[in-house]
Length: 299
Ligand code: SF4
Ligand code: SF4
View (cartoon, rainbow, N blue to C red):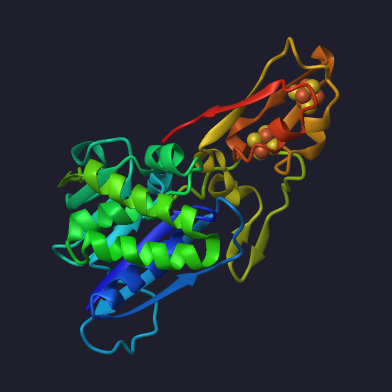
């Protein structure tokens, strides 16, 4: 059996990727299952999805704890999640990154395939939805499925839900990423440090943040959990405000869902706390004088 674990963020399409991969395997005459793991997610939060492929019927229903391949749709996850946990000996990692495999530190040296799937998605799909591009890299890195089967699966799955044109573009994204994928070995230096100990001061908290510590069944919430909720790593774009154009109408401040736009009363100005800006672009959409531009933040 070949087991795959997808690490992504809500909105990047990890679940669709797992399903399309399973469909490609079925097209090639195999058995396959795909399923997600959801917590209390919202757009941008880390999510997991899994695919199992076998020539025989698959009865296992558990999450994939010892994957043959790990697919990472967003390399900012490397800062907080040990994506290679449980990776089988001889396993591989497929990652969305602008870096070459030998510059990517996964904590262990393993076969790694890297592709700038975000740029491929932005160019072809006009949105940072990296699922089909990363599948192209998966096909090249593992050889478990043929690119043609993958394209067929993408056309079927996306065609049903989103129409033929979108399906064609996603198929092209997979093919383009296949051609751009670089295969090598990762660095194995860093140790993933748990970051929960960090406690912010009250000035660093976004509006609505709580300083009261609370213990729940899911663990500690409150100030000690804020490092996990720093959402800057989620953002593909970040807002930049043109002070000359800005009329201080405060619509952006009002509509920002993260409460990360702060009024500086003594200067009569606004400031964006990028630590908690997830790059959703609501502020830019709401600005009546087009004073906010969304610019590329990272891969
Ligand atoms: S992009 Fe704008 S609205 Fe969205 S979180 Fe950042 S500051 Fe707030
Ligand atoms: S919505 Fe636009 S004009 Fe209004 S405060 Fe924000 S940036 Fe300035």
